[in-house]
Image (cartoon, rainbow, N blue to C red; front, top):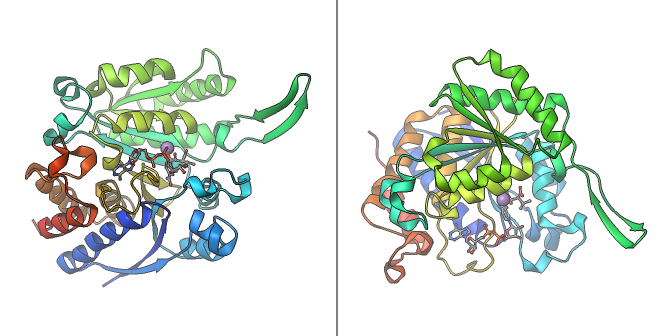
Length: 359
Ligand code: NAD
Ligand code: IPM
Ligand code: MN
């Protein structure tokens, strides 16, 4: 078979736990669908700071650059929270996204019917919710110049937010194209009533929109969007927004699905190469206990199969297996209504592997 190279950077906290389950799923799909993967592991995040003195060692970047796709767990933890910027796990995460040119972060939030009662929202509000946040990933306030200075009233901190036309254009085009393949509704989210970068964003969206006449476009201010996501989540289809707004809104959207432990993501550039990771972090509060939900990472593998490899049948099989296991009532603690019946990370992974089958 055509061997695909997968870079595995599991990271910190629950990262290694959830990645191990995702790899089990990939191995089972190798057998079932005749796929073939070669896994190469790299140090990344806090563990790389401890062992190599940097969150993103060159050797890890090399592994990613020669891979066809990257599977990432999560990084960060209290141990490194007071480090300087260069020695923070999160700086490695931003660095890898930038170095690999991954400007587009796709975060689907669709509600499994059987998980409606796991959400903190009323089931009737969630009915039919199936949206995608398309988050710009390599620009904005995350990547603008940052510094401290002495101001008139003592120490000040500065974060600058910059977007150029080309950066906005490429992410907005991707979002329009995604919307065209779905319900053809696009919400562009900004803060154009206050921010200059948002006014540029909106101008670019309006200029491009006529090229996609079949897509119904709405502009929504970010504060209103945060509210509407809870009020009428099912009315959204594709949401496109800048880096930090997308970070915040996607965690909010996660709660529509019942838990952040359910939300997968794909980070893409111009080609088919992609980095796949759960939306959640390293969850230091539950790390090492074997109770984290591996589904976000497992569903990220399904995204990898579809978006990088075109293995649609195997992707569908993963999604179907997850649904079957959830329909049968199996729950990790984060999505369990009766927490006393919750199962662990490995048990959930095993159940999904057993449920995998060729259609
Ligand atoms: P978090 O997403 O790690 O955790 C938030 C809450 O959700 C916690 O209560 C956690 O237990 C729970 N949770 C998260 N994933 C879960 C899962 N799979 N199963 C069950 N419960 C889960 O966010 P945080 O606590 O704000 O951040 C912790 C660390 O992770 C920080 O260092 C942060 O910088 C980092 N972080 C990394 C990434 C990443 O690597 N992509 C993303 C977000 C946060
Ligand atoms: C995410 C995370 C990261 C981000 C952090 C850890 C740098 O929250 O992937 O959503 O803000 O992009
Ligand atoms: Mn985030």
